[in-house]
Length: 348
Ligand code: NAD
Ligand code: IPM
Ligand code: MN
Image 1 (cartoon, rainbow, N blue to C red):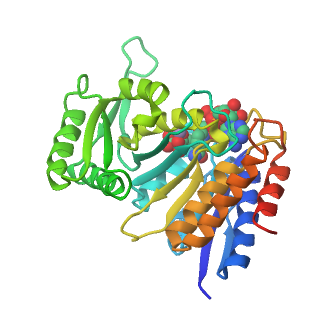
Image 2: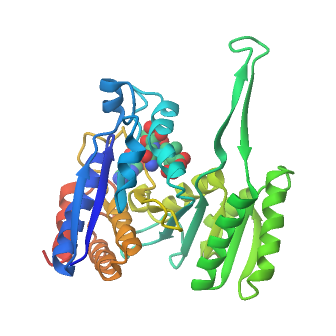
């Protein structure tokens, strides 16, 4: 029997209950699909920061390196720890250290979920560059606190970084409908985004079977609302991809449905699976967080580990659950009831 080691980092706020929900579902699927999962739980979070002065121990990355995959809830509790500290102390270093350069975020409506749009038949796969670009962390502030203050945040785009994410996008497009949308802002950003467009054009010659269209980020935001059915694979830089995927979450019925996979395609280090949403402090103690995004992310984890049948079983269970109207309206059902319904749909 195959066996996988999973690092669980529930994190903050609703990250904790949605990770618990995803784990219950994974344990059930492991039983029915004959593989073994073992979890090691890491309490790294803003609470951990308050106790230790760090979001994770100094050897945190090395500790995670030995796992087959990481399942994360959400990080951030801005009332107590600045986001710039918590996210740069845990989530972002993991993505970078493990070269999880492809962040895959699927956007489609599960049956029974009413999105805000008229269009129901969209199926968009956002591929977000996940290790560089606007998140490079390069910059600084001078003359701090004075009228002459200047803050600089430098985006860093490397040829290797842009080429590998675009290639990943082309491959995904080839495996789906053969359509790729590349998102830039090359009318305003004349270095990095022109560079991105040039690399897109160069790769397009290698993928004659893929139709690639370039969009500016502003036009893409409008298109995702007005004509989402016209899109298939969408590839974007780190920040543009971040924004587009909350928009993607919105058109699929809300952040409670949006899953994501931070993939290291070379498998030289573990990949990480987490919902698109954050810790949701506004509902964190109410017991009403939708666990579906986390459960869907767990299915993406099984797919990555090679347990495709288990992944499919989870997606079918989610679809059966939403088709019964459970978990489709924010706040109507409790986290535990939605999880229980998914477990029943799995045959538990
Ligand atoms: P958020 O995603 O936590 O919440 C935005 C809105 O969506 C809130 O109204 C929230 O209640 C709702 N929502 C989110 N997930 C939901 C779910 N599963 N079910 C029902 N409703 C849900 O975004 P935010 O408020 O901007 O961020 C809160 C904290 O989380 C911040 O510290 C932020 O930096 C952090 N954050 C972390 C991650 C991550 O760890 N991957 C992602 C986004 C935000
Ligand atoms: C996401 C989140 C993170 C990001 C934040 C919390 C740093 O918004 O995973 O989408 O911007 O990548
Ligand atoms: Mn985001």
